[in-house]
Image (cartoon, rainbow, N blue to C red; front, side, top):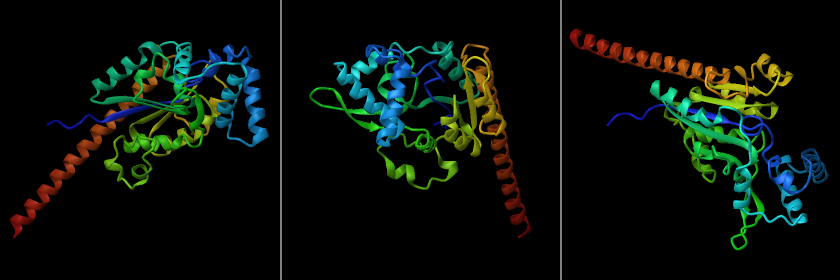
Length: 294
């Protein structure tokens, strides 16, 4: 039985990384007859007033404003809204191209979302099936009415990092807190940090970028339009290894960067395998020499 292929993991933020705007702005906010700026201003004001986490604040405002505007919400409603979310150019073929290149190098490639957006909306997008796991904010739904009534998960920029450890150890179930906190030797973890790439757009992604980078992985900051001060600062201060436009088409700078990282991981994997073989050979030769001398 052949050994399983080593895995490369690409982990993405969603809003402004895979999609040009915040996901609520495509269908949810327009159905309230509100402007996006007014909605987000209301979320900030509510959060400040009640000293709430910003993610819990927007989730609360979504439920409150939906009720106030007589908008019926269910999981299906959010999924349907996800179908309206726009994606950056090239996303329709990105996953096939990346997976195929990884396969050429002998790797299996997995994709994950780590987002402060709403999981139920992401699940309605045409690329949702491409992700092994979607870690994002989500609601608990009333079993009788199907209506959202309480946050099940709130993902902010600091607690995002827990999901990287889950991916690293292969403990993907968010309810499994025992195994994810158990000590696991690095060579027994499902996906080494060195095989990870984190892609995000801004300062809220910095904790994830720093975690991955500090353990030998790779981080890419993306930008739309002219290269901005935020991504330049992250590059200059070593928080990311690369910056790239939000263009995922074949031959794009993003594709070339990811392919280059794959190449370097493959080369390092070959060097490690060669080193191990030579160490095994040296050990056998030493043992044989000792036996001859007896």
